[in-house]
Structures are given as C-alpha cells and as structure tokens.
Length: 293
Image 1 (cartoon, rainbow, N blue to C red):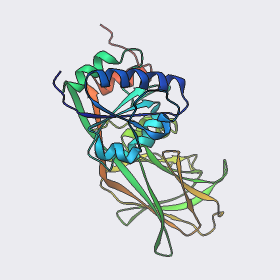
Image 2 (cartoon, rainbow, N blue to C red; image 1 turned 135 degrees about the vertical axis):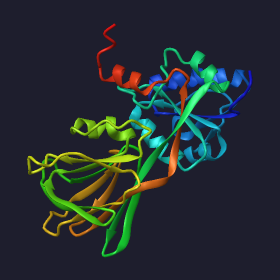
Image 3 (cartoon, rainbow, N blue to C red; image 1 turned 90 degrees about the horizontal axis):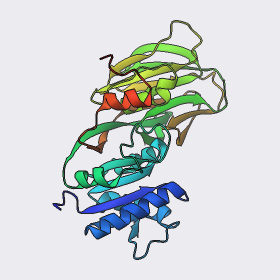
Image 4 (cartoon, rainbow, N blue to C red; image 1 turned 90 degrees about the vertical axis):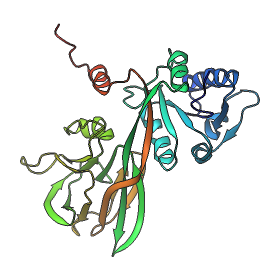
C-alpha cells in the first residue's frame, strides 16, 4: 500500500465503549499495515491494547500526519480547536448523533479509510474564530471556536444589553438573551437552532444571530469573514455574563467589557472520502427531500 500518511493519531471519548471498540479495530488495522500509531492519553487510559504508544493531543498535532477522531461533533470540536494550530489532517468517525463533522461510519470504516490512507481523498480548510475579552483596555481572557462564540447571561432567560460594531462602525444596539457569532462550520449547529442561516463551508463569512431579541425587527445578518466584530456590554447589565466558545469554553464578561471576535490565522484541515458531498450531508442529516425523478 502506498502510504500517503505515515503517522496516525487516534483520539476518542474516554470511557466510551463504542469509541474504545473503534480505536481497538483501527489500531490493529494500522499496525498490521505498518503505520506508526499514537493514541491520545485520556482515551488510552481506558484501553487494554498491548504495546500502545500514547501521547498528548498536542504531541499528536506535532508528530502525526493524520488524526482520526472517534466521537460526536462535540468531541470533534474539542480536538479540532487544538489541532488547528498544527499542520495535520483531521477526519472523524461518528459515534455521536447528527455528525456533521464526522464522515466515517464505525460500522463501515476499513474500506473508506484504506482509500483515504492511499491518498484517494479530498480535503478542505475550515477557518476558526478567536474571542477576546477586554476590560479597561486590557486583555483579560481569550479562546478559539470552531462553531460559534456566544454572548449570553449566566442564567437562563435573562435579558442583556449590548452594542455591536463591525470594523469599528456602529451597527446596532440590542436587548436580548444574547448573540451568536457563527462560522460556516457552526451554521448547522447552535446558530441553526436559533433560526440562523446555513452557510456553505467554502464561504468567507460570519453570521450574527440574535437570541430572543426584545424587538420583532431584529434578524440574523451575514457579514464578511474578515470583519472584526466588537461587542460592548452596557454598564447596566448584571455581572454574570459569559462568552461561550463551542459550548465548552466559558469566558467571564463584566458590564462595560469589550469583546472582540475575529477570524483566526489557524485553520482546520479536514480530510474527506472522495464521495463526500456537503449537500448530501445536509440532505441526510436534516431529512430534506430527494430528487423528484
């Protein structure tokens, strides 16, 4: 077999029986075909594979040519936020629910993976965003997001007030439960549930989706992906405000703080089977109608 990739990283949800079974299958297959295999530490601790080489997620990013992530989209997002800083391809095996980011089925994995490892695959770059919180002009915290950065209150159904600027130009002020800033990758996640538009992955764009706005005229809007989005929190807000990155990383925000959201210089290199088609994924996941004839 011609080896397009030489070192493969295996990443999966710890203590998950399905993920463990898939990793065991993949590890055996890859070793038999003379690949170097690295298993991420947290999932390796629940495995019983002999002579297993383990390392951290960052070490996989530094050493591997391809990372195979076994889990749902949520676990894929966590791994992708780290791996985006490295020159590595990423492919997902769906052990979750919808699986917009995870192409391979655990029930039929060896044949498509064989083709991918032989170089018969497609690839694409997905951009991520960075969120920074400033207080009195000083950077207090920051993190990255693959899907979305969300401004919201610390408790459910709590109205907050803020201003939005695009490239330092005032856009609008709003009273709502919050605001979702989504990438094209994230347009089929939380943003879609809130009524936001679906953006095809090749678009250089960001969507801003209000959450339960206190105005019937507030609508989602799509802006250029290279825009700098600034949110200024009104001083009248309650103190418990947050910026949530992909629903996992929480940045604390205080009244009067400024939040800057912009495209990161890092990208995620997704690897797909040759028959991958984005619209087929949408049609299958969202139960859209098939062709009439």
